[in-house]
Length: 505
Ligand SMILES: Nc1nc2c(c(=O)[nH]1)N[C@H]1C(S)=C(S)[C@@H](COP(=O)(O)O)O[C@H]1N2
Ligand SMILES: [Mo]
Image (cartoon, rainbow, N blue to C red; front, side, top):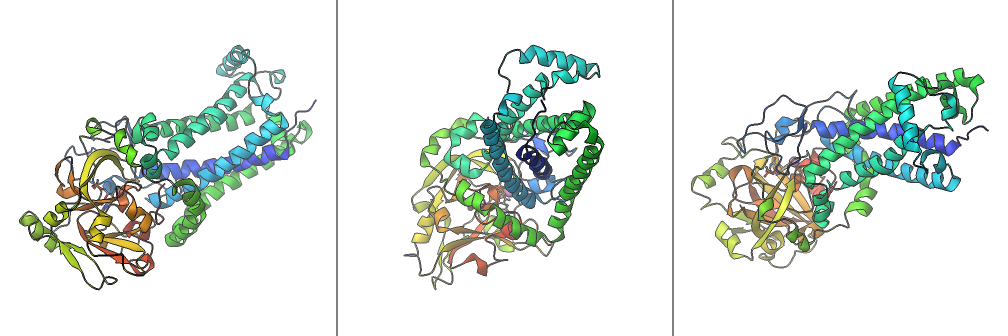
């Protein structure tokens, strides 16, 4: 009897093929922003187990930034290519949720229709049979068509592994790289060997998945193609029309590949528009998937002094004489004259707090993993004062104040449209402000904050990646709406098409 390849099966394969292309290509974009892989959580120079760059990392901290480590990939290869990790991450998030949806529908229908029996082995005989097939393939032979009903044992094992092991593993390691997940379920991230373990496993799964796709598509064309192609296109064995099926299959592949590349060029043609489109499209993922996760204080037990990293990456070098003479002046007498400006237009008046004033406020301290969305991580003990306590020194929250803006003496590392670099800033909403460990830190690992890490004061928001954590803080102020500041998207990195406001992916 003819095997049955219902429409849903063929459609879900086509959608899967399209989405996996988006996932691989945007994944490569993300990897190219830091083309190194580690198993150790300090991402220390020299400890990489794999790298795709010839650049040797300096062992000294604070001389080399992760931005300098970015590699540019062609839009032919990556989505979107040309050092656009922000857009790449958004594409990755969008494609992975659509992929999950498509996969769930596929699995439900697989079980509902009983077709699962064709691909999930139910007898141990599958192993010796697969071995026989493997021997034939290894000799560049082709098992006879009788082996296929419609799949042979090797295919059954391959499909089962991909659907029930590889794909879930990719999803599970993928989400564990979100700061929202880490701050809420630290033990879960530890389970994967920390941030770098999850990142490395995710990469290895990607390689296996790519290998599977190449084999799978290749074998369709090499092993009894007249059956496979007519199954794919007509849904049934119809070897008489195999030639037509071949043409349609090739044409479809060409169209899909062209659409992958077209999406890259479309993304790059107007990055701000693309960013807005992707931020809107991924909003449900943030709202329902991640933003309900709040850091838990119980997390504190997850990391101890012995987890503290030897090495800490830097993104953004300290202000120079041209950029901020005042910061250098404050530094020259050990921050004696440095003041944090607290207040702003909504308050009418500003107050100024010295480091000693800040240290007199209730102390907040915790050990946590710090990640940059480019991929590095480091664990440190951070000591400071809750941002909300600092704002409380001004009195009650002013009428209409819905956000807090934190500005810096330092500049943004780079502006997306290559205009002159502007002072770095980030905006927090009330929820983020009120998280227990949203702090202004003045110490790290028990010592005054290092210059390259933001001396004398930096922001730390546990539920976010590093880009939100303004270094060399100058002022904190209440604002009514972030639409009124910068480009109106809630921070320098958001303005640079790097992130959505409150992006926790
Ligand atoms: N003023 C300022 N703050 C900044 C940046 C910057 O360029 N300028 N980079 C941000 C980014 S992208 C990251 S990942 C973290 C890095 O923190 P670290 O350099 O202390 O490791 O700082 C954030 N704060
Ligand atoms: Mo970053």
